[in-house]
Amino acid sequence: MNVLLFGPELYFLGAALIFFSLTLKRKVQVKADYRIALALAAGGVAVSVLCLFQQGELFFKAYKVDLFSQIFKFALALGFFLVITISHNLAQIEERYHAEFYLFLTTTTIGMMMLVSAVELLTIYVALELSSYSLYILVPLRRGDGIDVEAGIKYLFIGAVSSGFMLFGLSYIFGATHSTYLTEIMPKMAQLVQSPIGVLGLLFSLAGFFFKLSVFPFHFWAPDVYQGAANQVTTFIATASKAAAVAVLLRLVALGSSYGYNFTQVLVMLSIISMTLGNLVAIVQKDFKRMLAYSSIAHAGVFLMGVLTIKEAGYIGAVYYALAYLVMNFTVFMVLSEVAKDGRDLKIVELAGLWKRSPILGLSLILGIFALAGVPPSIGFTGKLLIFTSAMNQGYFWLVLIGAVNGTISLYYYLRVVYAAFFMDPGDLPPVTVSFPTRLLNYALVAIIIGFGVFPDQIVRLAQAAVKTVL
Amino acid sequence: MLLFNQLETYLYLAIVLFAIGLYGVLARRSLIALLISVELILNAASINFMAFNRFLAPHPAVGQIITLFIMAVAAAEAAIALSIIVALYRKLKTINIEQATELRG
Image (tube, rainbow over all chains, first blue to last red; front, side, top):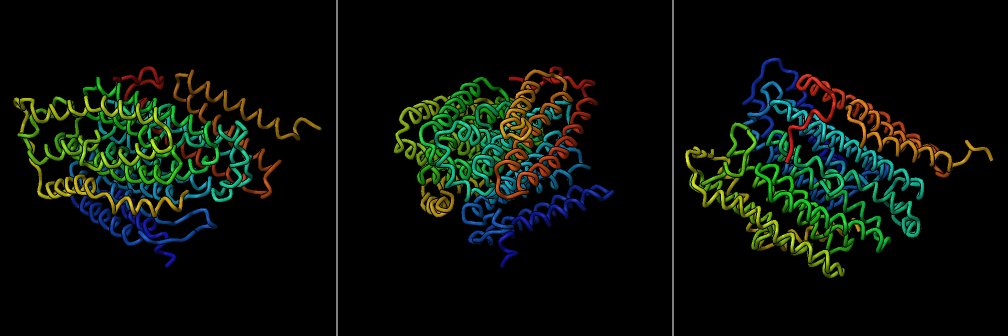
């Protein structure tokens, strides 16, 4: 019984040990290693489904296992599995480092899994650093002419500064409430309403997660890291990592529920700036991954909009959108890494005529892009609808209006991708061959994007049951 | 009341350290100096934790344990940072962040 409580983490820990032993092998066997990784990742999804309805507390109540955490653990295991499925062709990572790639991908997944369950400040900090440090190593693994290392340096230093901010903020929360347990901090936060040190402490402690989510003051790394890292690593950063960040933000922002105006006002500002800045800069991008990076900054603003309502409806929207974002962003990145088989950075014009070069990838791309843009009947639309209505019901009229205007701006650069893929002449760009498993993956993703967009009830109900334990 | 036996002294010290660290992060261009600045920020947080633990917190050890963890994690961070700095130096022959400007747009 107790083992199942800690099941997904233990499983991935075991997987990490296996990958570690693979890194020690003297002879490089890329194909065999990949098969092991794929099997282990599929097992991880199965284990996380098995543990979906576990409930309990571990490690002196520093670690809470509930539906909320288990849903996100499932999302993380799924993200890990999906990234492994597109890693069959790790062209940009030297062959002798493939095992290390799997190893650090696993450790960062463990870190994020612990992060979504942690309800104690020190546990949150250590889990966050475990997940971040593995990513810091993954980014410069790419072989290239120095841009990978440059991206790695930027990622590391912005991450280190933001976690420094977070620790500084946590220290004030600890000082003001004399406790490190969220359950004990929550009732005492109400007394801190008047003191600026409390607001500052809480805002600073959110910095670490603003960094992960690439919210405005900590967003500088996103475009460079997206472009500089190998496509598969970027995919992981853009999907699983965001879901984990949303989960912890939901837990921590709930602490500010008694703050009222001042606290949420700051979040409203950050949300507006993130959305506007991300969308406006995305318009001029030529590199596909850079454009997606700015789109992720814009999406961070949307997530924040759901979080800052601090009400059940907004939280449901945020959970739903986090899961949806994982699927739709992965779909786009999957197309990207299939088209750029040699692992190069894809320009948007290189997508020209994708519809003719590979119809199935063209279909996935258009659905993924439309979902990101929030076009019905995709999951992206349903998620945005949930978040916008909840913010509207809370009286954030201007925020919703700016969000809607931003949605329109974002259509411009999303449609540019669609235009390239469907109306531009492919010229002498070669056709893209898609293997049978990838084809299956494409069908599954398309079915999820449409299916859960039209019938979101199941997921919404699950999210509703999950957020009850957080608020 | 002695100066060193007051909570405020340590809180001000931590804020000063934090500010120096933040200034260093924004102003310095050498990666080693950046790393030192980041460590200063972490140490500011550590001082806060220790001070709150000494003067306010009922449980005697929580703040100290957190500080120990911060030290261990910061050591790991320094190891990763230095290894990436070495990798950068091998490729660009410099550790000045302004030379690393290939990614733009």
